[in-house]
Length: 358
Image (cartoon, rainbow, N blue to C red; front, side, top):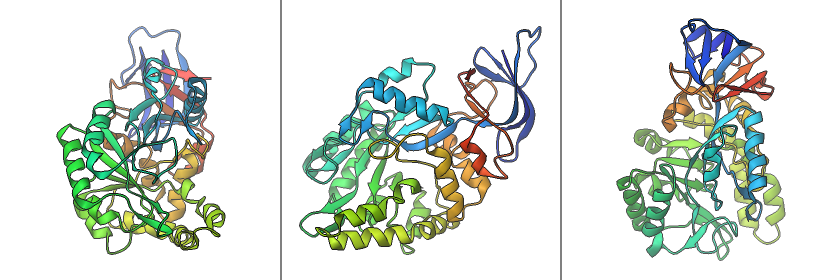
């Protein structure tokens, strides 16, 4: 039995003095006859959410299970206890049977245009097959499907949309019919309007979100997951492609230069913003605290940046926080994370399914 004492942040304004963990579940009533109690003190909040993460993915595609396990453990140690896996070629269902690993909501495997994405990551298909592959991944995933909305076009030497409007509309309609939401990788500007007007639910990265597109996103309630710790790599990517694709390189630098303004303008317009790191592939796992800090740097108030990885993110994904009877997945910090989100980088305790991770 576990007793968490100090300040329990059930929500940004719902602060309680203590909670109990009985049989892995949260209770706000002291158990009768409680004994053998372990007490944890500090500022408790729901287990952190990484809404754009790739467990089982490495630089060249799928990785062995022992590597995927290390990725998941690294996230857990950082306090990430709920992951929306935004595309992976690996079958990670075995993680669901492990009580010591974070919970995962899967989007299946990326769906990309032929030769328009990182080799080994995605199903690479043509538009006439998009609906069928979206239906396949909707059935295999956990309520999400991931498209690659744009990528470099080697003929033009710049980013461009991958799919014609009619293919996107049909595919998103089919996903929704099957009860799945759809998200898309998008760096550039020109893929966004078709995707949003076709009913997409979320855009990953969203670096191409311009002022004229913001009202469309806001009116449709389309969320963004900026992955700013990933966008920080754009200058290096641009330098690497300068000699072969100078137009693309210049474009990537412009997207990087305005990244904070893009995120802040989206937030100011009421567009939902959530925390995602894009861990996996080329980025290490365990970066959730760094991404929260990046949202604050972009100008999002600390409490809302915190919500983007806790209360608001869990509500968006349909998973509980610190409600009565919910699984006891929580992080305990030394001081109030609403005052300084940087304390997330060094959690005092991580509790997963009621067990303290030591």
